[in-house]
Amino acid sequence: MGKMGIKPFISINLKEDRAYYQDENIPIVIGLRLEKEWRNPSLFVSFKGYASSYKSSTRQHNEKIFEDDKSIPIEKYDKQPYNITYEIDHFVKVGEGKEIPSSKDHEGGNGGKIEYMIEVRLESIGFLGYTKPLARQIIIVKLLEKLDISKNRLIESRKSTDYWPVASRKADMCQLSAYIPHEGWLRGASVEVQIDFKQPVSYNHVSYVTVELVSQESIALAKDSVLDLSYKLNEKTISKDTRDVEMHSTINQMRVFNQHISFSLLPELIPTISTSVAKVVNLSYKLRVSVVLPGKNKNLRVDLPLVIGTTTTLTSEPNDKPHTRAAVPNMTDYQDDPGEYTTDSDRSSPCSIRCSECALPFTLTMPQPPVDYHDCPEDYLQAAAEGNTYLSPASSTAYMSPIVNASSTSSPIPYHSANTSDTSRTYECFTQKPASRF
Image (tube, rainbow, N blue to C red; front, side):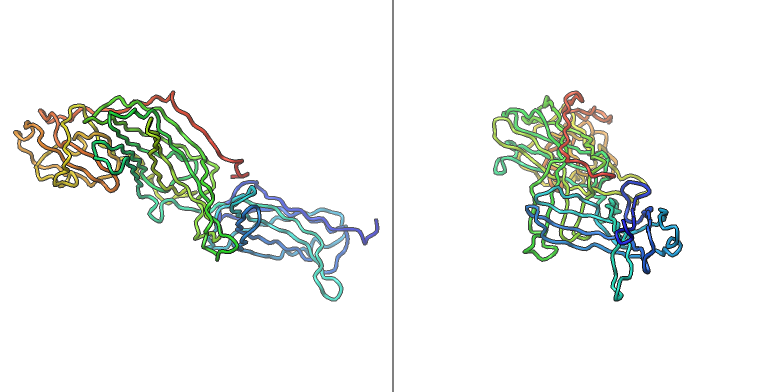
């Protein structure tokens, strides 16, 4: 082959094949062999990222996230013998202060894609001064957003409640509540979920509870302006945990169970993608808790929003234990009239029994204001319980008896209203092929 057919050789490789945070240096090795003398050869490295949306595999939008182009001097390699392959150490990095979304693959059909690439190219000056491309190579690198779960109120708790039938009296109403101690979670963490459920004894009792991690994408279509994100894809179940329950306790003609579940998040999850960092694609998560009411053709379901992050600046973990209140077996009948009190702290009686020692028909998990101790007359503790207090936290309804069998100042024995065996646990994963190097 004559010199006219000779082409130079270039290659590019990551020194460490893994995912990188947005503020990390990404070291690369460039291989260069010129093969012959070229006119003013120049070597360039380009680091760039794009976010795209697709409908029926047709690209709708293509957003440039960033692009950084740098020249690498190669004078010391532009010499004989030209058949030697040189290795050039270099690194690329996202610009200081630039916010980026995490990498996301697109597997066809509808959805979004977020991709980062490093391109190396060799050029020379041709006749008439035009740039002549000689060789080009591209590699894909996985990037992770530094998404801090301790910011933007993500350390605040979340609770959701569902009722059925809505128009029914409280005595005939099923109620499902779920609570998580904070909204932001790291990949691979275990989400602590507190579940409370009650139903009339006349209904067939619920036999299991399901917790699912659900994701949903939103994308911008070609007809949309950027940030509209008008097209919502179908929800996807990422993983699911099913637990058997035993509703063996009956309180005031209501069957109840209280369940605490540690739900594991997969370590390779794509972090949450918000429109603040990607304009044409959004990825959100939620935790879904559901029960099936046998014979009623009805599911009760609550959704708790989750933000899946990659880092936290907290010096200690948030309080991840749900705030619960203990129930005891000796209970008075609740009254239909809620009375005048809205929270336990509104009671005017100088009782030294804390709210956690009061009788509840099911465990409450929403954090309540602290209840202060007061001086309490001894004869008050020996009096029979009279009436009830109606407790109404932000998104749930419960009845409670302020004092039950208060014949001494000792705390009542906690009563566990549900018994769950670990042997009756089902765990399923529905994830598609995990992205490499995460």
